Length: 242
Image (cartoon, rainbow, N blue to C red; front, side, top):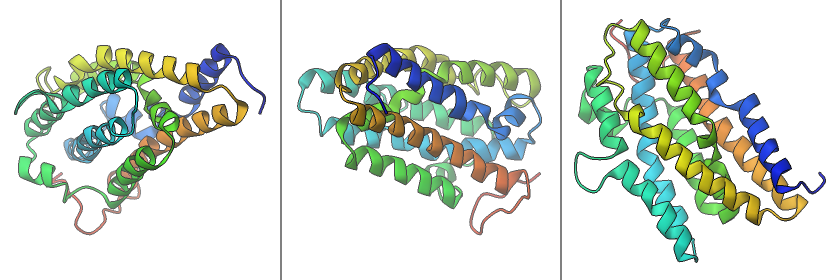
């Protein structure tokens, strides 16, 4: 791989999203198009909680490795975004209000005991990646946020239009995410472009984003296999009533 200019590197990163982001997954087409049962939407929300709950843990592990106070100050805003300043605030609390509105038992959601094994493995792999790889790779893996505003827009519009059991209050989590994701991805992208100064390091950065796309894609593969086709729900996983 040849050394890319900062702008060429950005284009290569964006190309990964265009080809590999989970917005393209068949399960999302079903979800946004109104072709999921309520049980399938419940399964999605329950399993996605595992990922949402892990975000502050992976961010805290990244902060612990930062020697530059400016990076720590910037990155800790992500902890507040997800954990809130106090009980009942932040993105995780809003996600639990989503699962509440879908009539899932909150204790069951928080325990994650009904989550698919593949979901837990994927989320665990992401946390280990951020803890064990270079700081630059860990930051680069967050760049899926470059692509999240588009999928959030599709999700909100499609679910409100197609599901009688979904309300604006159900999807309150997504109201605040686009500006947060834009802010966070702009910082991470600038950091990556500034520090990826050799062809080998740029290759690592691109691979980190591909890995993160694979994490998100594999979670939807597991959902599709368990709850759409062929419908093999693993022992102990959530079983929809419908």
